[in-house]
Length: 188
Image (tube, rainbow, N blue to C red):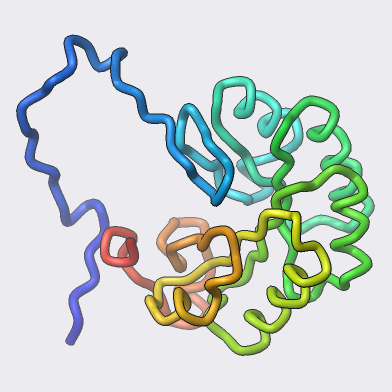
């Protein structure tokens, strides 16, 4: 049986500190291909976490938020427009039930980063849908998720990033409904 570890199971061992102060540490990172963030953090694309105001505030702080896919296309385009008026990077989620027309609407509203958000993206249908999106909108950043399987790297090398993790949060229903999950430390 394969062991699956979460961050509760792991401790990092401190090493010698080479910085005078932790405030001197530069954590700027390329978080998505071509996107550098001063604070390499992307807030979850859940309705209870991200809305347009939070996405705008995160960008001001050097981070990123992602608008959720769980609302109507009209509401999502409205929220996308609000973020686009204030932010360089406008990230919004889509699902496999979204049409190419919905995707086009979000892009026309200002989205330049799309998160294709499904419970387990390591599926033929999801990968093919992602290919269609990337072919039609090649200059848009596309993040594919969620996954924990390393095989996705070979099947989805055309995307700009992968979202790693399945059903590890206490509010996620994936584990309850399917029985599938992976500790986040092991997933990474």
